[in-house]
Image 1: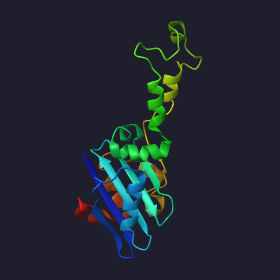
Image 2 (image 1 turned 120 degrees about the horizontal axis):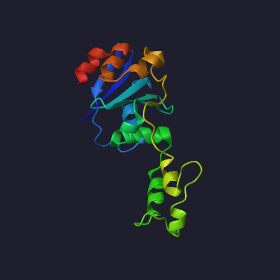
Image 3 (image 1 turned 30 degrees about the vertical axis):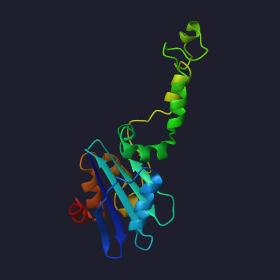
Image 4 (image 1 turned 45 degrees about the horizontal axis):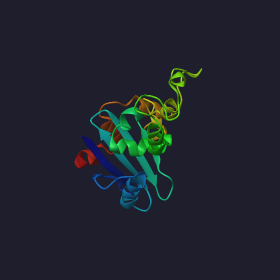
Length: 184
């Protein structure tokens, strides 16, 4: 289960709203959603959290490129919305993995490979294209801009220390806990 909220900074402080992600399929969709909530191109934060498994923050300011932070890339990459964020951060391309998997034969050998070649292992421990596809493996742990909230009151070490109920702690640091609770 996901919880998503959007916090937009205004002259009067933060305004929060529960964010519906049903129509979000790409990072561009998520960025557009944030820009629509922006007042005078001020800072907009989109928080996405999945049952305390991971959380992500997307920060949009005007027409600048979005900044992204994900608390646990490996967990996030397993979910549809987390995958949107981690693919951008890690430069992931599912087509590369699909192409590598398509070259594998059902008997465990690759097209054109003999069984003798199958048993050989590269000095680095890889066994060929299947491992090459895995070289884009998603790391466990945080990825992205670790200073994404530093100028708003949450330092890098504080961000890295967050685990359960991260959104509430972030909102507290930003002075937006009341508006976030209203959105929940």
